[in-house]
Image 1: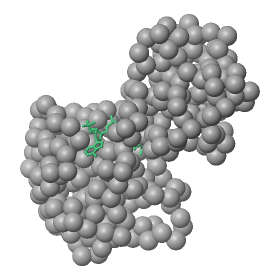
Image 2: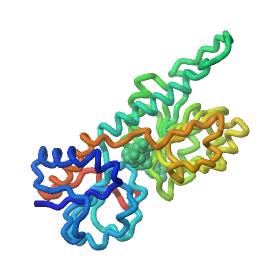
Image 3: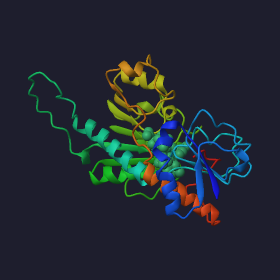
Image 4: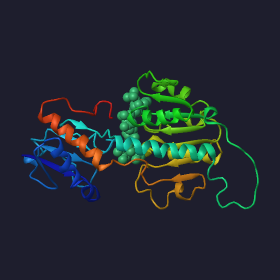
Length: 307
Ligand code: NDP
Ligand code: OXD
């Protein structure tokens, strides 16, 4: 019988304590899910960022650490972690992200909030069709590509940027040299990148000049992707028209942060996409099954890339 340690905040335990054991049974994995155990007896660690587990050294028998998050920035640089680390690629997570991103894009494309609670004011200012709206996706991974599929289905004039070259059905560029090309003239910019040393402050005083004047920035990726001072300056002089921010350097966003009161910033409390316990548990259980069967793990994190 395997010992599977669930190392995550209490709120997640409440969501997973029944569905994860059910998924293990469905995958015919003989294991017990526990909240606490002698580290030397633990076979697998199911992990989400928490205040208890920082040192993986005592987990001498653990064969893998399975993240319940897609983004592993809080754990990937932990030098005590020597076991293979997998991240979450979950259809439920991707579906949620597609809905959130598409909702935000349509909101700003169509100016759906323009007449909310407005006084009598009849101005017929129809938006362009989506095909005439340039949208740029920074990050063309699991979530970026899922969003790209939906935005393309709506006919947005899409551009994309990633680390490596992509063969995509829309124009893409890659690497540091390709960033300007991707952002040039963008009216809506979506950041779905991981937080790594290479992506930190990717939207900064220089790159925030490249989109179209008044562009909307939508960040469901990670807070450090944006240089906050540069964004506030770009909002102040109108180069950026609005920012929709779901993630921040410090979470929860401190009450005195200028973003809260800014009339052209939408603060969202890191809910763009959440791991869905039923589908996420099947992914975790499948990886434990694979490990026990000496099959390759799915969604292994590349430590050298940081994602
Ligand atoms: P993936 O690893 O599948 O994709 C990451 C993408 O970023 C890839 O296209 C990758 O390029 C690109 N990338 C990484 N580094 C660079 C770089 N230096 N330059 C250019 N492109 C780069 O991740 P996911 O799509 O699954 O998730 C993306 C992020 O979304 C997560 O890391 C997490 O931070 C965030 N997230 C936020 C959630 C929320 O609720 N707000 C929920 C879930 C995730 P390449 O394809 O060449 O490798
Ligand atoms: C994730 C997240 O990375 O929810 O999965 O942010």
